[in-house]
Amino acid sequence: MSNTTTSCKTLRLAKPGESVRVVKVAGEGALRQRILDMGLTKGAVVSIRKVAPLGDPLELTVRGYELSLRKREAACIVVENV
Image (cartoon, rainbow, N blue to C red):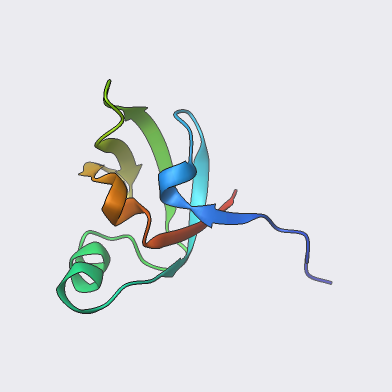
């Protein structure tokens, strides 16, 4: 039986040291395609390495490489805890 109490949130709300799994990439057009091209696709596990001192950008590890992402971009990515 599946776990129906899984908590979903956007990647923007994830904290440093946390690992999450991508559930859905929202948005439209070029921004959505850019996010998908970076490897942030459904099922990908993302580790939040750190957040810049002023809160933007986020530094992530996804599929074995490091990636920086703006908070407005991260807000388009729905994730769940691993």
